[in-house]
Length: 173
Image (cartoon, rainbow, N blue to C red):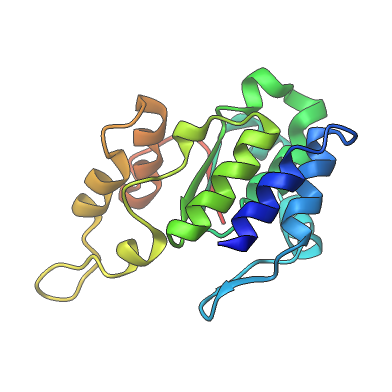
C-alpha cells in the first residue's frame, strides 16, 4: 500500500528528530478506511494534557483503538522530558484497529524508539468489542486472556483495567 511506503520514507528522514518525523508521518493521513479515522493531533494533545501529569507518570497507557499511534505520540510528547526515554518506551501500549493500523502504529513506535512488543499483533480493537458471553454480557475473562496473548508480562498486565483487579494506574484512550 502506498501509504505505508510513504510512511517508510518519512520515517527515514534523518534531518528531523524522531518526534518531528513521527508527527509529520501521522499528519500525512486522516483516514485508513471508512471506519478508521485518525484522531487529529490537536485533539490527542488536548486529551492527554487534560490528564494529571502524575497519573500519566505513575502508570501504563493503553490506546485501545490505535490507527497510527496518535495517542502514543501525544503521550510520548508530553512525558519524554518528564520520565525519559528508557522508562517511557515500556509505558505505552496499543491495540490497533486493523492490520494496516498495526503497520502504521509499528512504524511510529519504531521511529520513537518505543517497545514494539507493546503493540497487539494477534487481535485488534474490533475483536474486543464482539467478545460477549452467551447472555450478551461483556466477557471480561476472555478479553483478559486475549490481551495477555503470551507477550511480555508487561503487556499481559493491560488486561487488568478490564477485570478491575489492578491497583496500577492504567489510562485507556
